[in-house]
Length: 104
Image 1 (tube, rainbow, N blue to C red):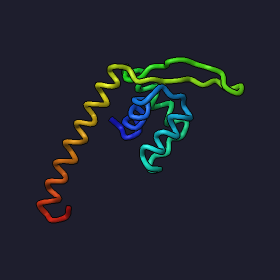
Image 2 (cartoon, one colour):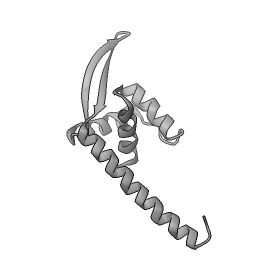
Image 3 (cartoon, helix red, strand yellow):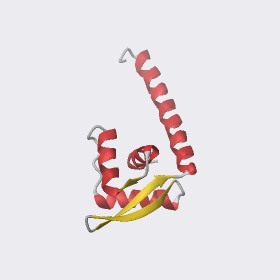
Image 4 (cartoon, helix red, strand yellow):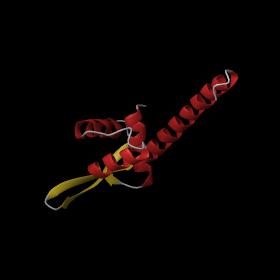
C-alpha cells in the first residue's frame, strides 16, 4: 500500500470526508510531509474505491460546488489494520537492528 493510500484511509477512518478535507487531513496526519495534489488524490480514491476499501458516501453542493464524500468500508478498516500491523513489524525489525548497532 502506498503512503498516500495509507494516509487517505487513515483520514477516512475517523469520518467521511470530501476531497479538500482529505487533502487537509493527510497534510495534518503527515505533519506536512505529504501534500496531495488534486490529480493524485482522485487517483488514489479511484483505486481505493475500485479495491473496495473506500466508497462514495454522498454528494452535496456547497457554495455552488459539488462535494463528493468518501467513507471507509469494512474491507478498508481491515486493510488499514493489516497495513498498520505490517508497518509496525517493519519498525520493530529496523529498531532491533539499529539497537544492535548502538544507533538507537
